[in-house]
Amino acid sequence: MNKVLILYHSGSGSTKLISEVLSEKMSETFETDLLIVSSSFDYQQIENYDLLIFGFPTYSCQPSLSMKEFVDIELLKHKHYAVVHHVRNL
Ligand SMILES: Cc1cc2nc3c(=O)[nH]c(=O)nc-3n(C[C@H](O)[C@H](O)[C@H](O)COP(=O)(O)O)c2cc1C
Image (cartoon, rainbow, N blue to C red; front, top):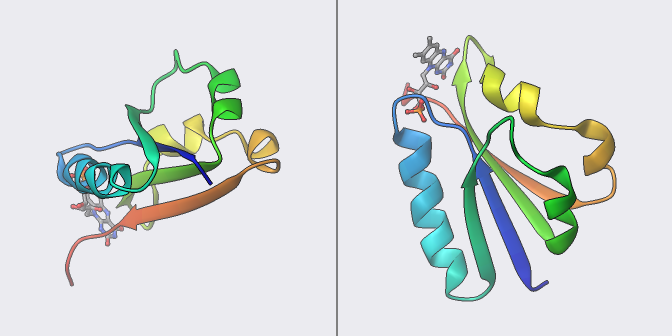
């Protein structure tokens, strides 16, 4: 595995911070890019990566809407991916 893409959504900044730390750490071993999810994302880009990591907060017991709208399940069937699902401390 050589190239990693971290895609995240963050409402108030916690997931952004975690994603940045993860990106920094993973960059020590892998070529790593960090992107915020957006409607202008070119899904062809993911062909350039070996692993996708998704970071998002929990809102109302679900992944944030921005992430749910972003994820294309059909596309992910062909990739390795990991999820960082951020919840508050209970
Ligand atoms: C409207 C709203 C709903 C939330 N619902 C949940 C929830 O159901 N379960 C949970 O564990 N945390 C919930 N949280 C807490 C967030 O997941 C948590 O604060 C997270 O760190 C926010 O990440 P962010 O700063 O990247 O937006 C909720 C927060 C908000 C603002």
